[in-house]
Image (cartoon, rainbow, N blue to C red):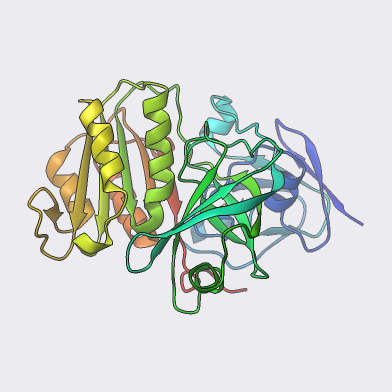
Length: 342
Ligand code: FES
């Protein structure tokens, strides 16, 4: 028999035995703040008010011991064993200043194109026939069901205004989906897309400056955010930092250069660790470039996507330099090695 979970200031949901509160809430159409859904980011942090909840393993970065002893939980790891009451902690959620009110759908697409962009990054384009594409906000992600592989999360890189979807897929040794895309996926093959998910989406009502930081295929959601920000003519200063190992690992930079040509308030900084031949590209850690350029992040909104370590270090820098935590919207890309095993 399912347990009843009352979400303070929201509705009541039912959670089947063994399921998490977050998964049940999303399935039942609740706008529950979330990011990774694997206990790594802390976006789904909530307070348990009553009831019996068992937590699956999670990262200390997402919920520390103190918070746990104060009764805080991560909804994506919280499996109830009785009826419960919880409260969502997200400041934005409680101010109701944003609402991710888009219905989650599951639709069939066809592969339109697969393009190799770097030694290990493929751009996958999907089209939909005879149906309206899924709605999403720039920066969100979807679950992709490719071949017979287990579903995997990828961020949309296209603007929400375009009905064809674009995903950036990095091949990983032992990565089931990425290797299928590299070796087996055919033009015209069906791919099921379920979504949208994720809270690291563009806040289009924000009028202050924006910093966007991407590493690796974290460029995909940042590309979607920047495309959308330019389509809706957001006027504030926008600084985009994109980090990679070497010049050869950078891709899609011509799109960002085009944006900065058309908007003098938009600046794009590619940064690589190996010495670049092109002197426009900076050398070093992307986070060091940010420290050199900007001193005060008060009033900024930040969008971060990429390897967990880069996201973590960048968040710390931004907070030290005055950004409010609530203005950081991040999407750490966990590889199978980073994910917490059950
Ligand atoms: S920790 Fe729960 S969604 Fe990331």
